[in-house]
Image 1 (tube, rainbow, N blue to C red):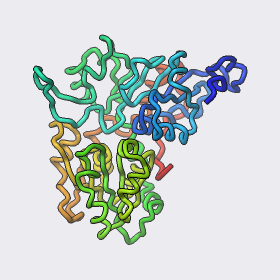
Image 2 (spheres, helix red, strand yellow; image 1 turned 90 degrees about the vertical axis):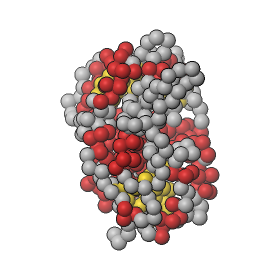
Image 3 (tube, rainbow, N blue to C red; image 1 turned 135 degrees about the horizontal axis):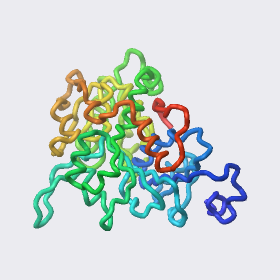
Length: 373
């Protein structure tokens, strides 16, 4: 994009049709973070007082394609750094210490805590690694985020232990991804039709996070095996697509009669449409359990005790060849969020407080998810 064609460019004020807007910057370091932030942006809909910009701190093809398809006004990271924004939105702690404005950061998966086990650095005592770790939240002795959105009250306890300096920025806001999925439950039949599922068919979704501990690497035979019993959808973490390329992913699955869900959108609709979800320790399996899907675990590595993945592994059987073994996990939604169906209102209030203008009079929208791009 030509820098001079944006409202921020030299002489830009002469080209804008809606002047005087508060400026919101959306930092998109990855497809995962960008997709989560798209849940936030409808909270700014219909407000002529706000102009939203997107920026990519790192250039890779998957993220650039995602930003293009969103249709947002994308500006170079170098250009963004030369201006002051009224609000910066992030779903990752990367780059926020260099953000040109007050930052609201929220998790890009289920919960602000992570699922990894304890680790021991050389010469140091073991410590818990999670998404509210002090080394993650602080830069140069300060907390760069103005608002840290948490999903659950118990995350405040973890934050108080790991980084008490960040407590003034913390807001327990629930989980907007989960709330959108819950709002989508009445549309299950539409999602099934969009996935090509006949009324007499069962749909099994094979869900995989990334890394070599994932379903995709540990249990690749499932993509062929399960097609003998049901229609199968494959939901793969966006990092798999980004690291290996769309061509390679589809090549690996070329002889499998499965519906491959795009990485940007559609996975939530697939979870809602599914009769059974066979997954791993990743967030997608946790969200499936939270909306009442019957779940089996294909694989699960050593995870942090007390994490969502650990709770799931304690409640869900391993897949051993029979999808009839799948179970529901009552009340799992309450483990992810302690503000069920309230996240939109809480997050919008926090955003407008930072922006310094009153919220719109209409209720904060929580819209159903789409079944694809």
